[in-house]
Length: 501
View (cartoon, rainbow, N blue to C red):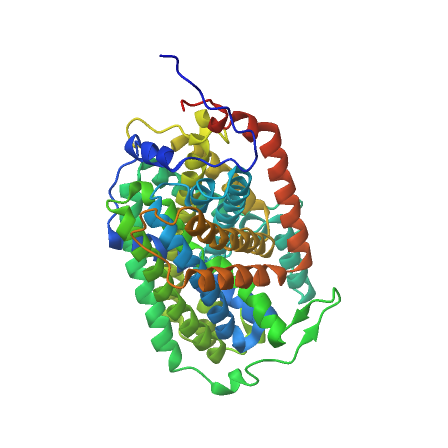
């Protein structure tokens, strides 16, 4: 009997058959070692870190003031809508690739590509932001031991010149330098890369230890800091709006929304949980649980820390690089500064670990579909069973960018990619309900039309409130992604191969 082949679908909206995902899961070489609480720990590991230890300073100082707590509420609500949609997808398609994989099987290839491309921005720029933050806390630790490293060795070129100029303005003699390189940020990324190449079990075990320590320290910050809260620092809770020379409003309601857009970066850890579905023991039940549990736990901690921090220190006096440690230092609690600084270093390390882990799993999903070169991005180490080549590549890129880029430039780019991906996934899960109503769904998002609509609107609204230059940079990134898709990915997609009818 002659075999009949289906004609190849050349549309950019072609979808990966759900049966193909089941085949991918059966032949996956990744180890399934992650339990329900192991996944939750990974989520908390990615969420607790950059947001509490760094972005609280930037968002309160520049945008929201004491009302930063409301920014965390707003960001948490927007995230909750997306998380509920993610959880349904994760129960249907427990594969690596996160939102990229979910949308490829439901909406279409071009949609999935854009999500995958934005996840690259989310994870790589997120890891870069955290690496720069880690360097800031490491520098503070050195200062505690009265070690004064040269400015040009601890900062990117832009920040180094700004710091040098500020010191010279106060009469401090700072030698001229023509070269600057953030060496601590560079080195910590290489250390994390090594851990990730060695294997997911080792990475998860390292993360679990760090998570226990840093959650304990966050609770310590909340309880100990509460004794030093001066409620006058909360007045006015919502500072009067200020318009800068670019026309951007700081403080007031718009300032709260902009701050929410910035701190949104802090919440992307629950997305990292879904990228680990290929290594979960019972992904259909445990991934949805871990997504929602990690989000709830972290949102409560964020709100409490932001209230304590802005109560301890007037928001205009908050340090931008290490706000929590500096707040305790200003109160003369040097012993607490040691604890917080060391915990922050460990906490930020675990955030980097989970973000870079998530990035390589998204690459793995895209490479398996032929959209990026599989020889590089889908190569699994014969002993460690990890995508080692892409892990090393991610490590090299993140380390170099972290060593040469100011923190504020990369943190907002991370949020822009995340917000669009979350809005798109809310639409995709709704679309799948309409197209495939009889599909088995171990977890179903409650009140889906309402939740999905609110998720789309909330995430796009936060994205709209990002700074103008951030939005321009994001559009440029998307244009580059479309060029890559039409010149390489569309031609190499495995959906170009004819299959039997």
